Length: 448
Ligand code: IMP
Ligand code: MG
Image (cartoon, rainbow, N blue to C red; front, side, top):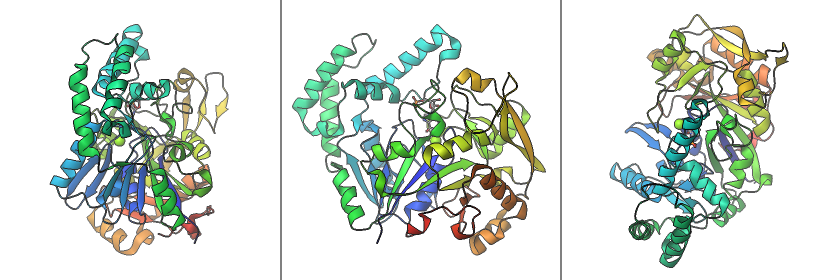
């Protein structure tokens, strides 16, 4: 049997309900791997027992028989991941196995200080230069990783290494005000390292062996294409690679193992933090999306900026990541509207038209004028329709909604495979890829 690696990625600016789609697909997987990012992430999963927001654990930990791997590409706050494990245990929701890569880097309290210090410095220099980071320390932790000042999760069980590396790091951070006492931090790191020791290990071989046995692996991306450090709206981006290439790098799985890449997009669009957002609606209609969509950050509680689906960005994300299908989420939020706009291309200030890729400079993207097409809406997705969707599957999707999904496929060249119509775990329908307009190769290899 062919091995099977599926990647789930955000196709916009984050918060596309990836957590829900990953959790849905985790039912088919034996391993779920988080490949990048850190506590900037908030993956929301709604279980019958209540809502869970995962920041550092992979969603596989919520399922019996599944191993959730916090992978090598991540930056991990060890105190926070410890709390996350304890909290899930207390709520009796830790059903799978937790594994943490020894190669993941340690995000320290001083990185949080530094994150705030850096973004304040940018804003002081120029109010428009602030990125509006989540202030969870993610950028500075990656800075230290690539500057080779970092401490890795596997170091935590080696007190001499912790002391050595921390002394070096403190010499590097002398410019930061209010650093926590070094010896005290070292002691706390060793202590939390002991508590986490049962979970920390080499994870590459674990996944290679699983693939050799033919066990399906799901890689759960965090953040999203347009926040990629290289391909996003730089400098208004995160410090990792939330792309399919990054998913492989951050998990140690070779590209030849990859079967399928699911891009998750909302039926509209949101963004948190600063940076260009051509289809943003600052007025009443934006407020409508925010209210009906519950668009508030799962990590920081900040209100999300809201606007319309942008096909230029989606086409770009599709080509960058090689999406083999889309998961379209939150279609219920648009339910009951007579019609709504979708951006099909940009008109630039010099009169040129852009269809396939956003301009290089963030300021140029901000100056783009979206060209909209008005799409007929579908009926409100009330309980009775949800019941039918659960029972009958995709055949119960309203005709207008089907036409919108076909329009999206035609405009991007990527079939829609999943549709999320509510926050609950089971409020997702899977379309038969064989009948999708653009059947993607490799989908049948997934043993779902
Ligand atoms: P950082 O990742 O905390 O450095 O933040 C950089 C930018 O990415 C900011 O605009 C954040 O709001 C955004 N960002 C980071 N993580 C997420 C996420 O999980 N969802 C949405 N936006 C995010
Ligand atoms: Mg989120």
